Length: 249
Image (tube, rainbow, N blue to C red; front, side):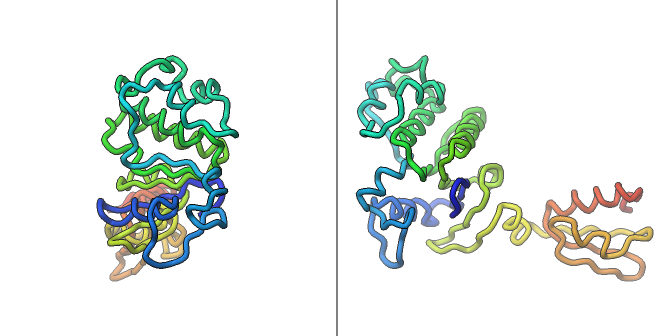
């Protein structure tokens, strides 16, 4: 995980994602291995001042008001609460009770709480689970803004679309083990569905398509060219053909 990136942890329910980030935050003990966050072991007192988190089962008392929640969790180095509420669209809701907030506003409050004490690393665990499509897109914008403000984001999700849109790099978990790692495009290219384009070339050679994203193999048989690769490869190869004045047949 590199400084200032959005790093994704992707996997189905029960794959071990939440267990991993809870171990990284010192909320539970690991069975084996060596864990370090910002060079410190989880649970280190100094580390707690450098890490913010929005947990999967995060909740607040129904009647606590937005400003009261921020005041309650503010540490000695907390950012100005009024500025924080303004930044995350909570100023007009500062006196509203948690139980009266919409799903999107609740998530914004949890994000504000995660950023309240100026963390260097922020953990977001299934932050868009249960949200409608509009609220989910709003939260995506918020996550990007967290990154733009300089924090490193660890995003736990089981939505491939979410990981592809937001993450600079990610790992894929299955039964507690990492089964894939890289950028979203690298993982899609390596593990996405197999696609094949079969056409009659009009002067093109294999070298014409070597640089197209997602291409895995190119073969020529009996005057036909067969290009195999990931699903996204189709768009890039077709664009190269059209640019060359040829349409596949």
